[in-house]
Image (cartoon, rainbow, N blue to C red; front, side):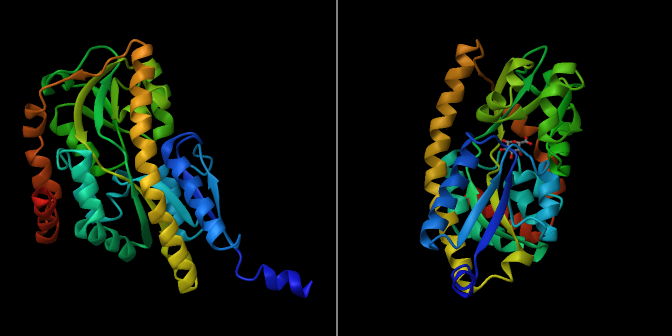
Length: 311
Ligand code: GTR
């Protein structure tokens, strides 16, 4: 008995939630991280992954993580906008001009600064993961210019910024949890939504909304974060192991993501869906008031400027 309790001293299972199913790259990256942590701690630190939103939608797992009832969650940056003001910056439309630009920013000083801002709000940022670019898709008619969105009910993530972005394009923003989008599209509660190709395909949204316009308006990354309440109770050596395993899951995630973007495009083509290129300039021009409304403080404006200057 004495031996057993000594051997398991400090053992800790860290629960992590993800909205996506097991085969999705974010969950695969968490599995990779879990293997690294397990190996490097000799089985003392383990990840228990709750995928397929069994612990709830993103706004719920964010709250559970804040409370310390859940150790970690993997969410997109945008549903954090109302909680962590600095996340707004990286969720702004047409801010990143490529995946390479986004990588350079999140891997550099601006990414670290946004990461530190999580701590003032009860979270510890462990990793930025890829999320490609989000584009609009619709049920009934294709979108070629902003005027085509006029009056349409477009689902957005639960974020004031996401709502304002869609409103600035003349559509009616409809905030819904991710798990409700497929049914809302099927039943006609909404006319369209916006997401990257892997999510559009994986969640079956393409089955109801077959017109995908390549607006590529938002490139907000995914984030893996931990509850600061839990973090503060961990020994420094365990924190270092967790940070390192999370960092080491990033290259794996990038590889899986690039692969998945191709697989999704092919599967969609097989289903007869070909994303259509659009002129992005008028979409981008419509976003000026959104920048004015959300990048308000000198600190936020400075982050925007530094991201734009990152080459
Ligand atoms: C996906 C993202 C999810 C979730 C979803 C959404 O691209 O990976 O974490 O935020 O979008 O639109 O709700």
